[in-house]
Length: 80
Image (cartoon, rainbow, N blue to C red):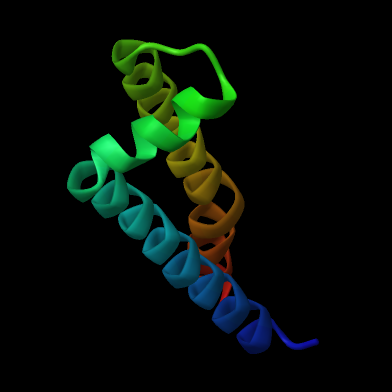
């Protein structure tokens, strides 16, 4: 696999992962009540706990995207 292919790979991984993150955010904002109803059936959880969980999980996912996709992409772009 060439460096150009690897660079393209990390670029598309970043695009796909940020799309998932934006979809997740939109889903939580637009369908918050439905999400809470679904999760409260399975788990004994309050609205505040659910919001806190999603906020923390989205933050962790965004950090993972930066560290595992964007940083390698930038590094490869620098060495090309």
